[in-house]
Image (cartoon, rainbow, N blue to C red; front, top):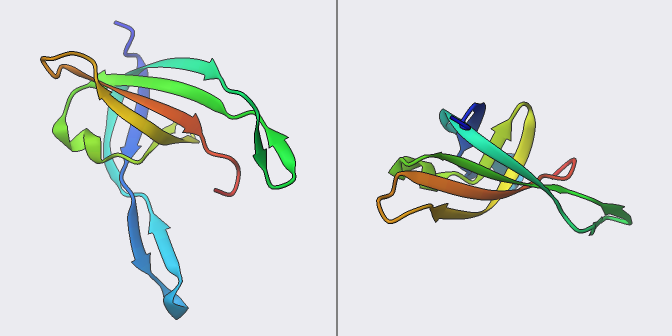
Length: 105
């Protein structure tokens, strides 16, 4: 089928580190097969420059634990999850709409 890309779903864990500063980590939930559809996105301001982040739709088989994902790692590139949708009433597949993370975010 078209689910021929390996992606890693990651949750988000926030704790307080040294000096009370927030520390964010991204523990793995699962590495799964997915279909990937890339879309171009309109420009956004990052600091004082325009950036053109990629938008991607990742479709994978359904597992309730996957809904805790906040970030996807695909081939070393990280994508922030904007929304998660059940593709049909039988909960067979999940669709993650994501935006490529700007450097340093």
